[in-house]
Length: 635
Image (cartoon, rainbow, N blue to C red; front, side, top):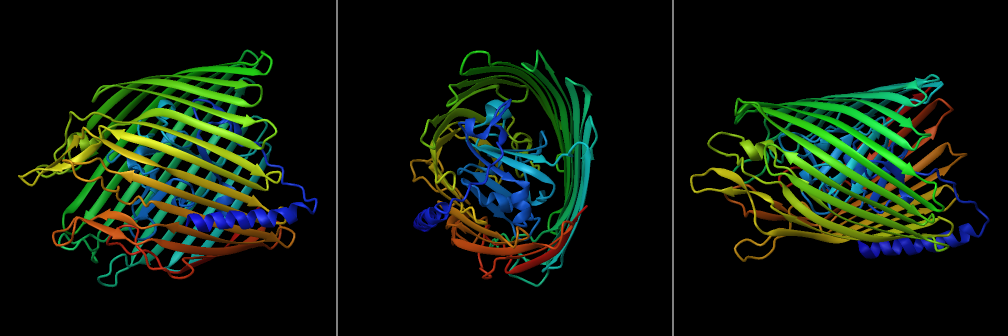
């Protein structure tokens, strides 16, 4: 795969030279602003490993779920149990699924019980952009941001205008989608409302029987902002997700799935209200926000009966930033913040509601020097009432080398991941017993990279090396009495690797992007044994995407290939070895769109063009060749 991407880059360079020689002018890009700390900064000034995916890119490539967009991001490994809507995990830089924090419009959305976010519920609609920060991020984002943060910002309304869209789509496996949105505003306010419903009859995720396993997902999203005065703005967000997904259980003798009428239902509500005030001619900015979520899940199992759980998380934050830019060629900004968090969790098997609280103080410094060197540093102290307190820190820097079209970036920091409610208090009495004495997992990680631009931005390549450890790892031990419980391991797990990304713009309608990641993620040694590779974390992953726009920018075609190398997976069965190697695979998707007029656009997409047979999770089938077509109207 590395040779393949390297060859692609060389071809891109070869093609760029004659194209640029034709006096073509590069597309002037708008400055991208990201939130890589307590405050926002231009992307080029960030020293962290960052990828930004815009909603426009996902729309053009007709991506249905955010997880499918993440497959093309360096450092990511995605695993889905079966069909669309099935449990979907994202692992970043070889870490666990609950080591990456997911935030939507300022609200943490990770599940309270298991600590991770199920991407099977996240439809890629009405999203403005996704900011992806890789590496330890707990200082600014809190627990669970050990391997990174996925910060999702949905679309907002444009003031003094109104725009509405309607979209419908049909596809194989009985797939139907309908989406409506409206956004706009006036002189001192803006708003956005959207709704999406996607249903699929699915396919049989089991090799046994012929029952299809479908999925239904309904998502509503809204946000607004209102200027109370020239210096004060209030804003709010609200998101509601209702979904039902069919499941097939696994046989304990072979670990293979078999047909059953099992299913899971969930209801997710996320909301926030915030206030922003500026003073001293914009030098002082104060922000306060209250956010909350409620995640209610119900599981039906023919073998084990029904179960359910309900979790809540409430956050209140305040921060004040002072920016001093009167020194020649220098800017200094200092921010101080406070955060309060309360979490509750009620699992049906334990018939009790558990809760825990935390208080945090955070500080941040930003410095800009001579319009070329940029520094960011921070420290955080968490006081937890249910387990040990934690302190984290981080430093990052970027240097735009003058007259070299080269940018160096590096970051280092520590992070923590808190025990989950299941780990602290258990799951099924007499089977999985919780451990209230668990400590947070801890990690130290760093990365360093270089971004090089060629041909006036026609080709941009970024290469980053990363290394990170994991201490106090929470793992399950199995006892002689057939019970199990979590403990903090005393050793160290290691992850390291290289991330490569490249973008090519031929300035004639043809663009290409590529990514490759090498990841070496290994478990700690047990009783002097060998280090084992972490499960579902392939050493090699990569993607390649090409798009061509023509016919006066009304027509567009694209093709993408996603590569996942072979990887280990656990097998929980009596008559099968505890580890199995899943083969590598490459999935090719193609599609296109055509603007009939200023209002109507038609589009189509084929996934898994060559009907590749592969597995992401042992025992679960994956979709074969599927096709979708639809129409969108904007008015």
